[in-house]
Amino acid sequence: MARPDGVPALIPDPCREDDLPRPPLRTVPHFWMMAAVLVGLGAALLAVDVPLASWVHDGHAPGSLKKVAGLSEIASHGLGIVLIVIVIAVLDPLHRYAIPRILAASLGAGLMANVGKLLLARLRPHHVDFAAIDRGLATFGEWLPLASNPSWQQGFPSAHTATAAGLAIVLAALYPRGRWLFPAVAALAGLERVLHQAHFASDVMWGAAVGCVFAPLCVYGSPLSACFDRLEAKLLSRNEADTPGTAPRPHVSPGASRPAA
Image (tube, rainbow, N blue to C red):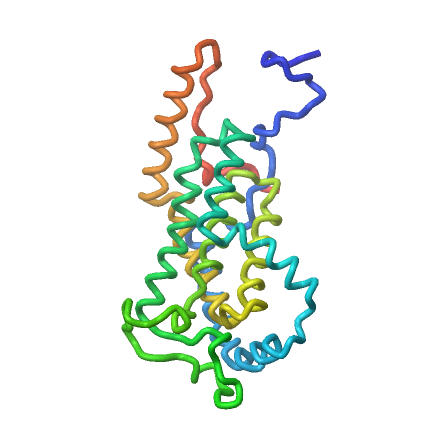
């Protein structure tokens, strides 16, 4: 027996996810509370930032862990995000309408973190003299360096981690089956920044906090999210107009309330 679209009924429709539980964090206040927790964790990690970075610098981190974490960089880099949305466009055409929202939530979070780099300078671990610096606070530089500081003084916060966190938030809303997978990949992306001495652990926490502040605004009940809702509704209606014979498909915002687990 086949469905009207010709797909055998035994094969579940991958886009019918209405009865799946939503991600545990489902509102802007939820994510902003998580951001506050991450900011606090980052402050606490200042006490171990330099010893941990020195341990990694001395080659004690397992090579296999570095390789696994390195694979996650695709979720934290601009080119990787572009590749991911191309995969979505090819393999999941019914979610093509959400590509602008995905790009905004992920790359926008990374952009916000890059703005933070203009406000406060901080050394990256690969440029720290561990014989002379033994405290996390000593790795910070001047306020408001703007664009005058070089890349090795742009460690605060981690824009890669902010990008990965933003991507995880929007993808978990679009694909509830991955509500634990996407945050796990984002966590690996943050670990990759520490293991490759691009950031201190506190920078990673603060970058994730930036993602938790910005990305939910693209998904969950904000004026920005409403803009994407209207855009996606137009894209869906245009697609239905260009495809005669298809049943109208109502637009459902990825941040809309659905049954909880």
